[in-house]
Image 1: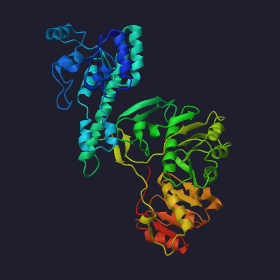
Image 2 (image 1 turned 135 degrees about the vertical axis):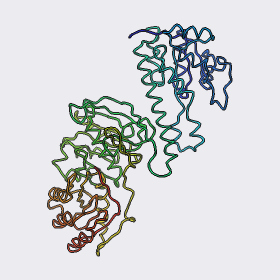
Image 3 (image 1 turned 135 degrees about the horizontal axis):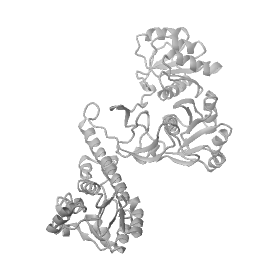
Image 4 (image 1 turned 90 degrees about the vertical axis):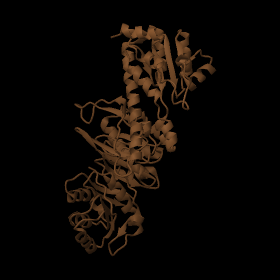
Length: 529
């Protein structure tokens, strides 16, 4: 299991030249003969590294604008020969072919080319053929040779070669696993792109999930469940598994490559709640603050100053905010950090932090501080189930005031319009059935996740108390009956926004008119199961 394979001959063919010269120089110092192709060979020669070009080995020049270089028996026989089998070695000798001991390959930047907005012909040219063929061949034959696809592994490979004179079986097997994961993600990206091109109507015929582990977590949602954090390597952008709502920019890692600046390791639930808070705050007007507890907003506010936004969001539900996740849509200020000083908070996430804020947070060892870019939502929402998955376009709020219809005899005031639009966006991120009460740019009551809408209304109004007077009401879906609206109106709500489309719309409107409420229909719902 620990058998070491000596490395005497290596094949280097990389698109990403980072670190390849240093790797080749280290190999040469150990007497390793190097074979290389195209641009890699040119780069190595310029650096003074002795290299045998692939065309000299195969006796065939590069063809078809470089599409054919390494697709040749003198290459692939050297990759696929099982050195444990005498008959394989005999056949190599018969044909005058030397086996390889190490293969270093990385692939054309297909995903990056797609992301750049390049045209079809350019994208097609960045579909690597020879590279994946060599990687797969070498990975299959890991008992006989090593394969490296990640430049970050070059130093550890050189270190093991210097220390052992070769690569152990354990190392070769780990490298092979990484290689197959690399080509699988690459193929998923290519297949997904073609599926998108071919799907003129409906959802694409293929959706590839390629997830690479970033780190193990202490456990999942509960201590008896295993858990880990993964990043999407399929090139699709935003996708998620059993939960909804992750944002775009996934190629950089979860939440666009969020960095934990301080605090304990993030838990499974911390990541879920951080995403929920950050996706909502990114959709709000500046300067906004969102507090999330158990994947639902429990306080949201927009104000001229960040610390004021936090205080007003916190005031919505001071009990639920305990142990919550706080998100800001601008670099966190020292004043905002000071406002949070006496409140136990699990995570704060923002696009940046002023030095005073980091200084204030630094005294709180249990507080996790995340820095992440604000990202636009998009991509697909993928929810797994035993034996398959449900896939849909990600739900985002694209509608605005110009798309809405006022159906009541009274138009909302400008202040009501501001609160209605804010409540509508907040309702998008609250679990259905959803009722949101907003007054003066801040939530005063939120009812979430109830089986009946009237129960959500009771919860929201109870949370709001006297603050419901003059508040605006949002419902994520239509009111089947007037009861949920009446609950809010009877404690002082003055305007309501909802999708409409119910058989009970007329009765709901009549109840609102009797109470002097302005009624706005959006024509679109935002269920969140």
